[in-house]
Image (cartoon, rainbow, N blue to C red):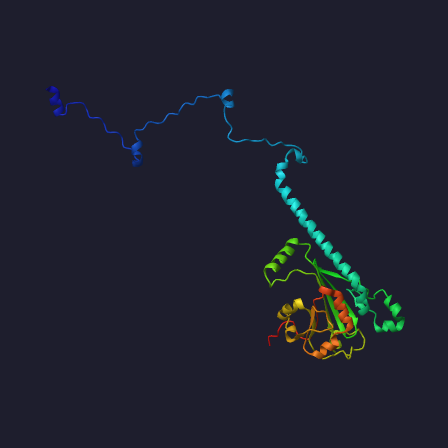
Length: 329
């Protein structure tokens, strides 16, 4: 009863003092948390048995360090499998390229060796030259023999020039009524078999694609009374005068019958002519001319003999004064 009365009138145990409030309200939740103590770490030594029982995750081959020049000690044949496939392929390509260019040069030189004597009979100068020709004054003063023996006289250095690996050109001049003649010898692209194979395939699949062929093209340009414009005037020499080299313009052609259609489609000048067979010519050759009178004068026995000797290698002989392409105006 006494204790109840003390509690009622404040005579009991004093109330506990409130816990101090931290100045920072953000850390009120951690006010009563004790400081952590560090965990104890006991040293563990791995036994040899446990180390041997471990299974390696990947195989590792140690690198052997040797002298810098001892490559065979640091490598193996399997390191060069890629090169073993690439190098032979490159050697084959280089070998075919070298053989193809050499083969084309040999064929072009053989053609020039066979035709150079005939060209030199018809033209005064054949090939490419790099020295001056003797003037009329030199010939009159010292004679032709001494003038030709002079140090600065033009002497052909090369009869044939390689324009590309499959095309060779030469030049001839010095003939009456003819200004000059350009000759092109076109051969197979033997130095690039893949390109040659693609051209054959396209010509087989498409009619518009022409198959690769080997041919010789000779284009002669006549003076036609224009010597003054075409012949260079010698230094301190007389002015070049025109001669009786002019002629009536016409279009005339002797064509292999296999090429008639393609020539009419490709050349404007041939489309102006009419086709007619001639009894003097072989059956596989026809005439394409503007007038019958021109055909009578152009077909000579020597020309017919040359065509028969050429055989299937003969494609066309064209005399024209018209452009290859149709004029737009």
